[in-house]
Amino acid sequence: MIARSVAARVHAERGCRAFVPPPLPPEFAFGLDLAAELSAADRPIGELSGIGRTLPGAPLFAQSMVLLSSRIEGTEATMSDLALFEVLPPLITIACLHYQFEAIHPFIDGNGRLLVTLLLVEWGLLPSPRLDLSAYIEPRRDEYYQRLLAVSTHGDRSGWVRFFLDVLAHQAQDARNRAEALRDIARRQCYFSGGKSHY
Image 1: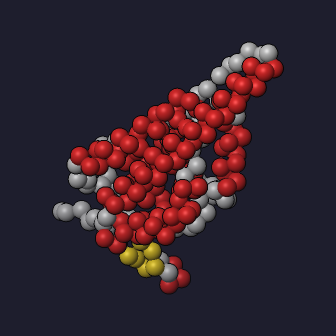
Image 2 (image 1 turned 45 degrees about the vertical axis):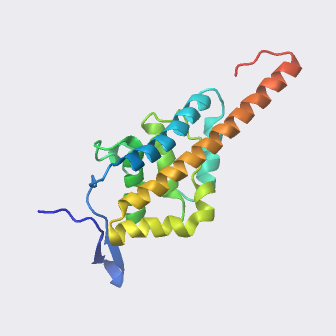
Image 3 (image 1 turned 90 degrees about the vertical axis):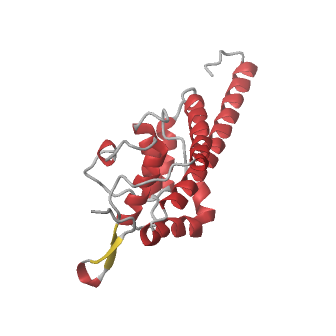
């Protein structure tokens, strides 16, 4: 039996139609170009992870992300429960999980983007939730939804994963730059106040 690569359209309750995402894990053509894009996203995530360990205030950042990402609906599953497969690199796995979540939860509330950041923390790729994808996705909202829909309608996982890795790379780099700037400000304040720096 050949696994389907596009979402199935089904009739749901009250005359609604829905997509049933293709099964996980997906089949992937893992060429050099995708490996380069994965590396480009992986590197700033690692750099952000390093500098993120030196900054206090993760709970405050996480609370602001929750507020910016809108209402979070309760779920019975843990982040680890969502990791149904381990055959792909973690960032590609998260890209696929994000698509799956959005396919079954097609609301513009930001929960899927928050899920990405929480998975990065849960899987040890970031020390704390310091990555806000919405700031990069919002001005590219049309492309974001087109890429997600193309997975459901045409099986274009590759286009989605490339877009997703680009989002991660840009936002991790931006967050790292902001974290470095905050660390520098803290060091200067400590220097001028005559105290000891912890950064």
